[in-house]
Image (cartoon, rainbow, N blue to C red; front, top):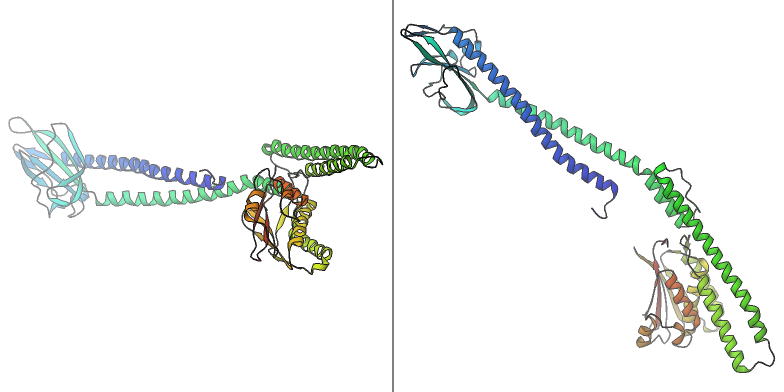
Length: 445
């Protein structure tokens, strides 16, 4: 069940349980009910047999039975009950209810004082329908000795089966309604139980987007430990970030003064001055890279207004080139620092403006997993062999064509920090196309 929601898992498990429980319950109730009905039927037929025994008389060798019996079912034709008496292997009497039957082969004969009961007997006189059959052998005084007399009662099973089927139908209906009620109760119960989970997820999402600083909802006691842990984690992350930035600021200020003094020396050789400038540039770059450490909880930033603002500034900077710069595409959101976003778009657009002849197109797109910022120009482009080299791990972006300087290295660092990707392709304008890809949803590192 990997990947399934808790609600769906509970429903599936409940359905499996009900699929097993209901048939087993129906089977158990059917067995118990059928056994009870069968025992009641055996007792009924036994009493009818005793009624026959009490009414039977043997006068010498001549058997006698009254015309009407106390058991009305045996007096009515086609009542479903049939009585039969055999003496000396001959049928000496059959009830009036057996008017339309010729009974010549009764069930096996039980011993004297023994009874015989069959639940599903196919009688020779009625093979289309199944019957209950009960037999008992009693002894009566004859002319010379006691002689066995065999008493049979048959009962057709149609009404019995109808009653059993009606019971099963009722059981199935009520158990199905019970199963439906259980499913509804489960859904309601799951909704109530999962309500705090949904609220927790919603609060975490709001916090990740920077819309609130802490989890503040009043959760059940089972969630209090998790709530406190998340709040502590966010507080620790915020405190560490502040301490880290403060330490780097202190380092920057402590290095800035000695370097300024060294660079201001009047008798400093040109070679040393160039080296110190390079050191200053490297220190600034590495400090900037370190302070780019992305916070785990960022508010969403609309990209289109920022791209339009930077585009307007680039047009002013390169006014002499009379560039046509268009921003097209979706309204997409970047989860990160606004300054970082402006620096990335600004560097890419600045390089495109240097290389372009007249046209630059900024395209904004989004998919399920990524958001994309594409910048393409109609300049000379970037050679393919250099393109492949530039996207290799460890290569510096300040080593390729003119106009793509240290700014691209900063872009590469920021892309890595935000777990994004940088693609270098050929534009349909025949120049270069540089695409920045970022995760579509905020990550909580």
